[in-house]
Image 1 (cartoon, chains in turn yellow, brown):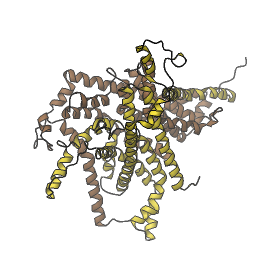
Image 2 (tube, one colour):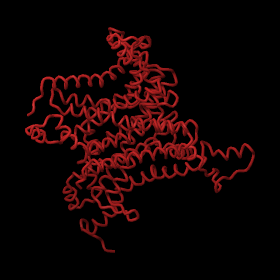
Image 3 (cartoon, one colour):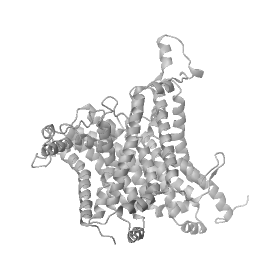
Image 4 (cartoon, chains in turn blue, purple):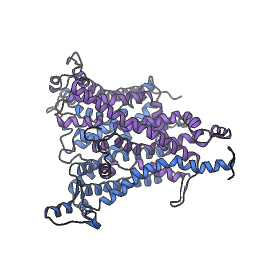
Length: 327
Length: 287
């Protein structure tokens, strides 16, 4: 066999065809094994009556002393019952509504707040760099710690927020004093959770939009001012349109992240009162972990996926409409 | 240069001060609560140490000594193992795939995918709701005895981290000039040698970005840690969340514990802030 000298073109090509596989394969294998395979698995499970420790029909058969084989000898039964239940389960509908509430309201609040803060931090003032870091602090906090702090802050009798409100209403001479049941009222609690989530994540919007704002050349503003535009006009005619594409991305990222919301809720309200603050992720976790109903938990996790895909499609459709396509 | 009117400056400073208060006060509250005796918490809010209450380091001492001390250090260690293990894996695997996608032309004939398709497929994994994986991971992990193990958590976190790692690294390698590797290869180095000796050292900023993100994500993660651990591998977030149901609300202890969990990532973020900004901005601007 002919040896190929080092550094020759032929050897490089042969080496590269091997190396390019070596570089990408580990990732692809991990994704296939830990993401694609579980997804397919889960889809399959959602059409069965599999529970923790076996299947419902197998358990029933065993208690009646019948012999049980199940579907093709697998020991479980194929069923559409889980998806039928999706349409009947009131708790699922509540948790889905709650999740959409968190996503829509959370995204609006965080975007508005984050944008406002980015505009403020883009002004010139003393110690600006210090405040740019300070305003990011909430985002760097462990969510569980942030949630726990939120729970202390909004505690009805021991928390400072209620205390502030008491002093404010006393100062204004209001009788009775303003008392807001932050975490115990079904109408208020979801808003409290949005406040805490926004405290933590509005800085993310700020960080990205501030970076984009810094990329806008100053001459653009100045030229507009020379032409007689005021700040309001400059914002709506120049700044906002330039930031629109990145805004869509930020809204998409935040929205997708809020769909996953669980830790803040578990710690602040535990899903209560009733199911008023429970999110889909939390319900899925409880269905699987607490009730051990794997089939149904898998089915509702696909409901969540459908909502996520619908949201993504809606945002992308919106972006195609409002962002001028120049590519 | 446009000059602000006095009332505009006033408004600006008022907003800055107000928001600084909103940001700082919860941290202040968390910290001071950890210094309060139960009695100072139970009788309504007390604000200023030495004036409204006498601060005590009792709860901090409890947290790090005796039985409670063992619990704290064990869970801290668990968090550290899970986070650093997945960080190392994510950095290595992510850098390799990022390099591959930046330097080679791939074509997956069956799907008709090229580099961009593959990259989008990979990043799309990052946005799947983790709840989708609750059932399959519970079942698969039970089958392979991976429940409540460090390696189990490390593997899940690596899976969740690599899409973003690849995304950042590919972006990074795209900006790294190719000449250096090529001259090394002309001198007889193989692809792998060139990657390890030349490319890897040059890509420190990108690698640090990936490492910071992977570490912070894994350190903070809650859902999988809750699902896949029972006793031995429980991480700090799960420990903290568990406090609120098992023993009633011991605000002072939980505050100290929450700080133990939060402070390392806050410090890390502060010191490595430019890498975080860089990674996030690169991710968002490209996506």
